[in-house]
Image (cartoon, one colour):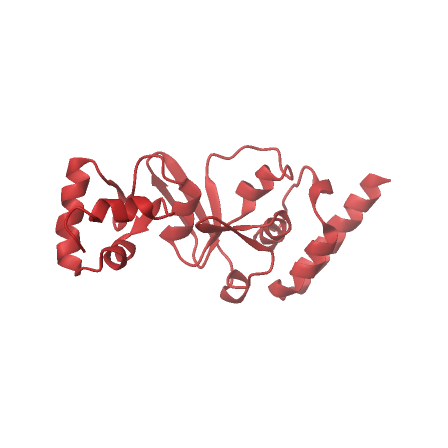
Length: 194
């Protein structure tokens, strides 16, 4: 790569968050040379170091994108999507993601909460939407993820769910107890509508 074109290459990318590996591929250079160059650009203020192995164009990086890049595979789900869809009314300061492990981490005063979902369910694309550089659960998938990991959970408003989609996605969990819970919530919601 030509001298002086390193930062413009990153700025042209649609991503706001980059791993070290992303930058190596973008710059087409060896690891040690990239490290030296990264340190230079961070000191100069052209790049932001978010945490070990993660960098951003500026402080306005997309926190949802970062959430799905820290542990891969993962997607935004649970209370983050349920709150956005009006299914729960409680506000949470954390960004919740489904992943292959359970972890809570804080980066720049933002808490990221990962909840473990079994691998076959995690990698199934049913009810997963792509937004720009990251994946998010549909409200129906977030609802099912929440039922899957919680014994008892209070949902404030189930009227925004498409129950056809819920029952279409449900088989990917392969869980009979969960099926009974969902059927019970559906019956309760139907009786409340009358």
